[in-house]
Image (cartoon, rainbow, N blue to C red):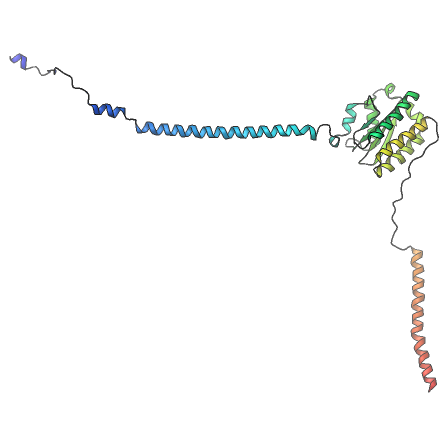
Length: 284
């Protein structure tokens, strides 16, 4: 009996059930977990907003770039206002026409007349003339240097450029030049070449009569090649204004008249009172 009741590690025959309160406590969400989820949600919304704004900016930039590129060809490419003398050099001589109107000042009728005149000359005399207009020069000092440059670039050998002629008209500088190979220069003659450059091209270009300048120059050169009488060119107008100042002779003449008038008035001023006084005294 003593052995049975002296054991201190007696295990009860049943295990107590867990308290229902503890299970309820474990099932409740933790406050820290709820706060973290809310912060993550806010961060996700903010990131989504930033991403949306960024995409919007990118879309607007792409649209602006597309619009700029769509207008670029209409403004810059192929517009004669942005063309230069380098375009004429790089494109080479025209194949189906005799005119390179880079300045855009020649009418359709003028281009047709030049083509008819130059094509007829080439078929009869085997001399080819090209008429070129440019708005301004930036690479050369004057039209003569540019004309020589065009001839050398288009016809690099003496064989190719021997029978070729180049007429250049610079609209902004109101000047022109004519150059060509030895055969062309000999056929026209220095006299007509100089006269055309000094009369037809600059005089008419000064009045902005570019079409008349082109046609009259072509006809004058062709007439010289054919041995016909020189049709001549326009004369430079004398734009000298009349001066308001008198010449020396006119000044001397006016001065003499003024002296005569003043002297006469002085004589009258002295003589008349003296005569009146003498008459008054004699009556007494």
